[in-house]
Length: 431
Image (cartoon, rainbow, N blue to C red; front, side):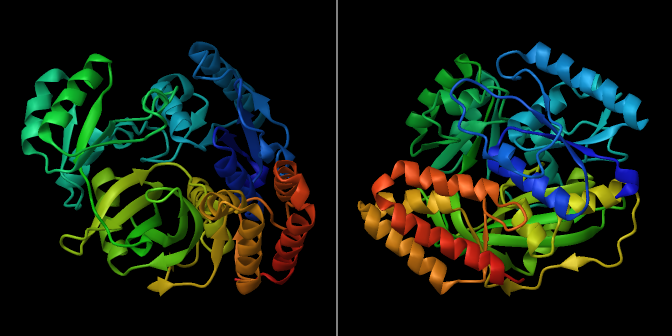
């Protein structure tokens, strides 16, 4: 790729970071990892990847923001001197993305990012949920009823005009994920009455949180909650679109996808065009849709401005959004648009670690849980893409197996049987 010019990948979410490294490698894009850690962090399985090389370490922005900023600037200076140009930065989490926007003026002499124009603008309007909602409404995008609550004077209006039940959440995820860390890891808080909402909002604003209040969208099944991905070029044209929905999640409801499959609805493309136009966006977006039970219409509930934890799954089925970004960045011509056909595909993304957690939680019996996983793998053999084990980069998956055996040392034989199926699946896998 383009004289072997690399991209910078900021690590925070280990699974997403690993997916980005793999998606880049499959496209022949060199990566420069920029990492940090913290006390109590889970093991970084991504560091075992054969694609994890020549990493730079910075201070944790959550605990030493100024040093982290200065560390990034020093890396930028070194890379600019080495390559003679600004490098593209890809964030692996919302906190990293916020870090990049907060100090974009300081970083802009050395780094570029997707979003607008020539990749040299910040994306704070699109990142903040209050200003994003304004852009989307102006662009004719169907979103949940949404009201900002940044200061006390806005509370009564939101309480009186929102429909119930509703949820409130922060307008952005800050560097310390302070909302989640002070709300029992919840991303949003549900309220059923105006009295409850009013009382909580006054407390939240006094504690310094900037919020939005949104109507809660009810849907009937996992097929009615879809993640859709798009890439739009410098002309605002969508050159690629694909999607997926969860088949299993944990915990239920509103949990993380354990098993997912590709899915597309014909309406998504037209809605995505409105979003791209509203944002004036250049790059990729992850759009979260829900089919509203009340009117059977698709509603946009969330938009992600960074890669997702299934970005390599999309790449392996033919939609490499990191590659599209790199080609656009360096003006490498693509031949055709890549539009996923309507309906679903029998290819499955499986996070084995989450699947084990789900089955153990539901079955209350490890042997039964492992048996269910084995049956699932046998049923879908040759149609599965795993979060950690892929044949081109197997060590993170081997670490996952070792973690299973450490958790359940008396189930070694059953666990080995499962991972024999994992390896066999990768031998016969084909898209």
